Image (cartoon, rainbow, N blue to C red; front, side):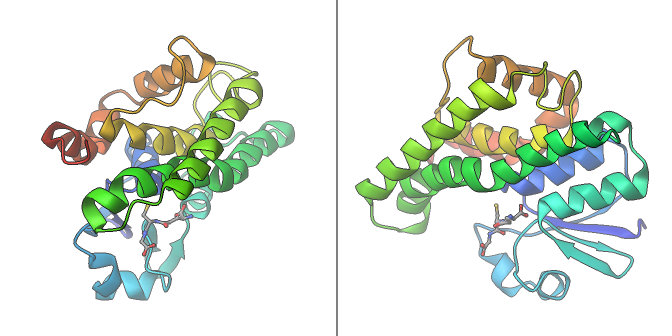
Length: 225
Ligand SMILES: N[C@@H](CCC(=O)N[C@@H](CS)C(=O)NCC(=O)O)C(=O)O
């Protein structure tokens, strides 16, 4: 049994980032599935011990417990000595990756996740009332974040960190593709964001299908339409 245990739900964008990284780098781990829609994160005893904030993803590496996908990804990079493109050792290149990760956690998350929750998940699955002002506010943030990707973060190469995939691609990719569940592609066809999304998807290969299994099932059921 691997020493590394990962608590996750594939419906969670940051969980998918960690799972995709582990799968891409063939790092053995034990899966601990936490059913967010069933509210399991609130009650699961193991998750509470590993992450007092009770969010996923969370990690228990032989007793060393950690939350926050960005911290988990950086920890895994250092521990498993993965190919350099994932988190470049060159100072400036690494700083670019960090810049995007920090930016995405606030800006892309507020926009994409916020829009996802206020427009779809909340009203359609969680019984939340429709709040038009919030929907509008989050859509504006989403549009601004997409524009920042288009005009800043995607101006240096095929991927955010340059010519190959890095952990900086995984986070915003997960946020934007979450919106596909209800048929929204918040970027123009043929734009840099569109091309980058396809590049990341292609680079992830068969791991993409595995990580998006739950999203694709929900999409096929049409429950969020
Ligand atoms: N910044 C955190 C976000 C973690 C997070 O909020 N995860 C969500 C699922 S996407 C969650 O567990 N929500 C449960 C809750 O907030 O109670 C990360 O990147 O790991």
